[in-house]
Image 1: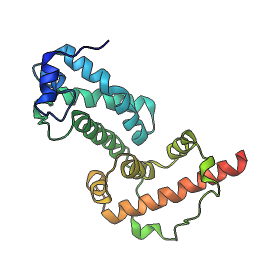
Image 2: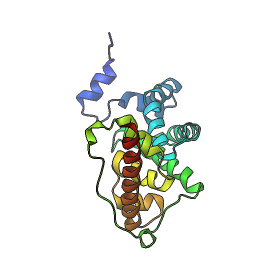
Image 3: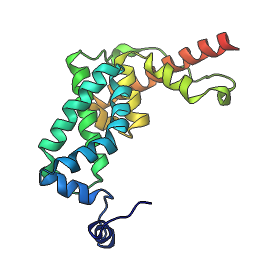
Length: 195
């Protein structure tokens, strides 16, 4: 049975947004136990976020280590305007994108994209499993994968993606459309072979 202390109940009663308020406040006071607990609460989810962007487990683990060092170094800057998890996620996404930028993301300008987008898809979409779709996303080129992940999985809009990746909004839209097209091709190929 899990019993919460008075501080936790009070934080809920006074309407704090974040359920980990007490841990965050303790971590701000350099409480290593609280920092360790916050790390354990978020590390797995943040590793998945980073992996979806960088597509390399070792690199994602490095990103997470650096990101959490930054989280605890800058935790006093967390003001509670969003949940702590959302704040950490932003740091992880930015760190992951910086890794891709260092590797020179393969982004194609809209003017170079050309061609029509094939809007057809696999006839029986329900037969596609989530693991199959995730696996196909990981096969996309870095630029496509980054834009697709940020838009679909992280909820960024194209203007935000453009700002974060240092590209135009139209290039983000182009990359997204080309990523969808490539994803369809990968899934169609797999679907036909697995049939």
